[in-house]
Length: 171
Image 1: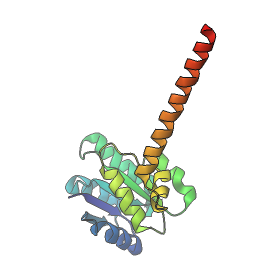
Image 2: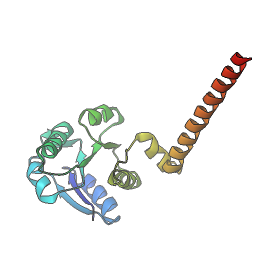
Image 3: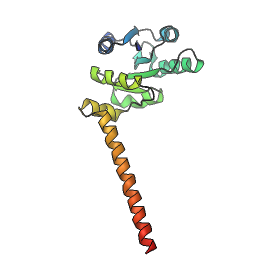
């Protein structure tokens, strides 16, 4: 069973995250104490840490640094981080903090579940465009397949053009 640690001081955020993920069969632990994260990580061994942008006197950057430090020290395995942002402009903070994904509050439970599912797949990469496609009812998998098909078509067209140029040069 997948495990998640939620770090937030806002009860409504905690309730939304817990409600969305527990329905998917995920074991969810929470803390409102950012200073407890360092001790909780090796104890709980979460697959994902969901971090609110401001928790007590610590912010997203500091908590992400703790998670990445624990990974580097070997205290925990590879752990994905989902940042919960107050506004769209804060996405650069999530990137700088080395978060694997980010969502802007108010939270959409479907977006959170989909993000968690993507991060739970080995080697999978989360991105905002795929999330937007999924929420718009377009299959993210379909979007990836279409993009791959366009790339193959472009490569084929380029190869055909190159062959035609070479054939014209020979005559």
